[in-house]
Image (cartoon, rainbow, N blue to C red; front, side):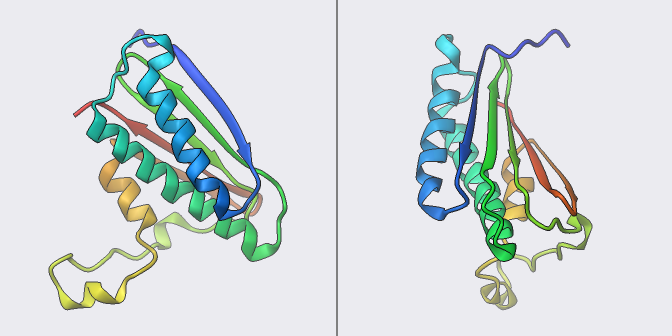
Length: 148
């Protein structure tokens, strides 16, 4: 594959929910602008991108808040000809991605008990690729979004 990112941004934000809207706006703008060329994503896929990035950053903020880590959350976004890549890195305590329970089917009454804990499932459902690397020094989430 002969792919070279044509645009990229790097953003660091304090671990506070007030910065989520800024992150969504900046990542969405980077995906739409395509670095001065035509964006590879349709508007619906940009909406998916904003949602999964918001979920990843929310998880990062919550992880750092849980241990009082004041470090900034790092967000990187690269726009290529055929995809958008986003990385979200935190300094939280880490977790075992394989230990995240599967959610009940959306049409079952049991699903109504799950108001939180949907972020990782949404990332895997809406992103074309969602990778989570986690350890005691933090977590990195890598998301790949391609056109429909």
